[in-house]
Amino acid sequence: MNWQRDDFEISTDPAKLDIGVVHSFLTNCYWAKGIPLATVLRSIEHSLCFGVYKASRQVGFARVITDHATYAYLADVFIVEEHRGKGLSRWLMECIVGHPELQGLRRWALVTQDAHELYEQFGFELLRNPQRWMERHDANVYARKTDTGVQKI
Image 1 (spheres, rainbow, N blue to C red):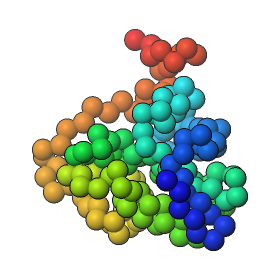
Image 2 (cartoon, one colour; image 1 turned 120 degrees about the vertical axis):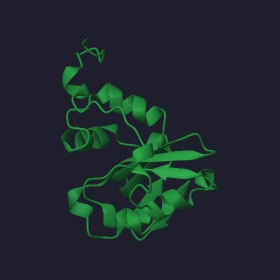
Image 3 (cartoon, rainbow, N blue to C red; image 1 turned 180 degrees about the vertical axis):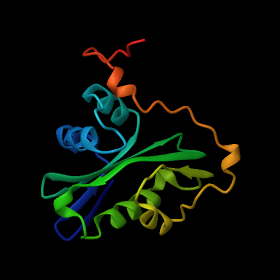
Image 4 (cartoon, helix red, strand yellow; image 1 turned 120 degrees about the horizontal axis):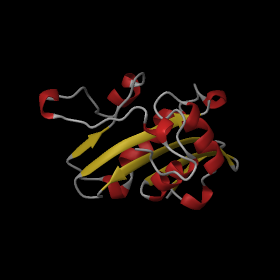
């Protein structure tokens, strides 16, 4: 799918993604610091990805991990610094939550440190029953990867 607004485009075409832009941003951000390129590639392969473009240059990204029936997890949402403040993240979210393959889902989830106001505009809220949620989180997983991408034990 493609959406156009002024000089910008949002597309779910994986062939348009600039993996270098995505990896460069993610490996330097707080939530995926040091993520290996092989991991980014695998995550993209198994997600519904949304690229944001000005002309043919990628300026934003998000991906949705979903079964297309009941659940979606929103991840890796970003707009590069020079294009922030233009309403692109809001437009990106409009495209994501309006995507035909993501309608009728029972639950959406995401984790954010600093973008609560953006996501609240789209119905996200703090966990109603946090005592029911569990996680297995390994904050240092990328630091333990070898050059082959296999985790050291």
